[in-house]
Image (cartoon, rainbow, N blue to C red; front, top):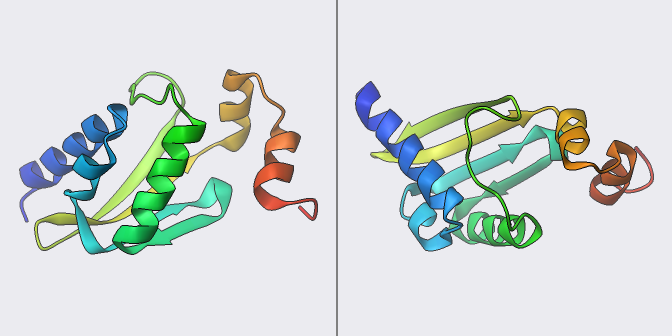
Length: 116
């Protein structure tokens, strides 16, 4: 797959996520899709898990919108059969919490439980 197609797929996914359009996002994802978010120690594999995770994420983040000048992130994509088959979404949890006005410790307790 050429670089231009990869960029087009990544941009289309950003647009679908900004619209919180799960069906549109799912059309861009391969059946083997693995979504990883290390900051939350989370992973979702396959269409059903990814649709569930995206739906839950949009429900808990109703103002989510892809903006390229706020929280620094790094996204690593993997492509297969002209679709996105992997996305690793890296960001600093403390920076996210500081910008959101919530306690990093509270988020860690919610996401990871009381043992971390």
